[in-house]
Image 1 (tube, rainbow, N blue to C red):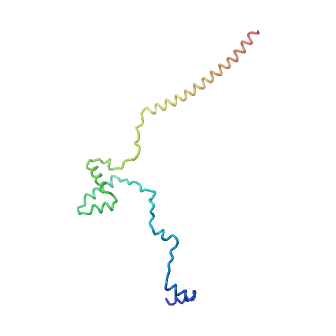
Image 2 (cartoon, helix red, strand yellow):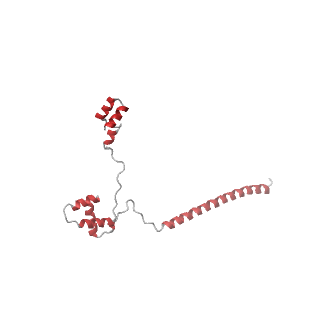
Length: 163
């Protein structure tokens, strides 16, 4: 210790070394007090909804049925992170024999059954569009033929009557 004090005295003045040995001052960096406080803001990302498999539910029910001592059930529920209402619901489902209800249901809209006539309707609509295109072409050709016959008909009348 004396060696370090002598070393410090040689680097600094003797009064400065004594002050440093007697009063060690720790200066907190800027913002250190703010970082020690918990953040009061609410987290923006909520936890995802948990989904329990049928095997997990059955395992939990078997373990919960085996408890005999008071307090074991509460400790088990805390360890697993589930509520007693989950157990009550799962037990009712097990008693009813509803094994399908033990598996998580797909959320959202249910898929609609396909109409058996939808393929036929789509096929007929496609054929109708094709035929409408052919009809438009045929009408355009007929219009052109009418115009040509009018032009030729007028010129033939003029040539036949030299008036």
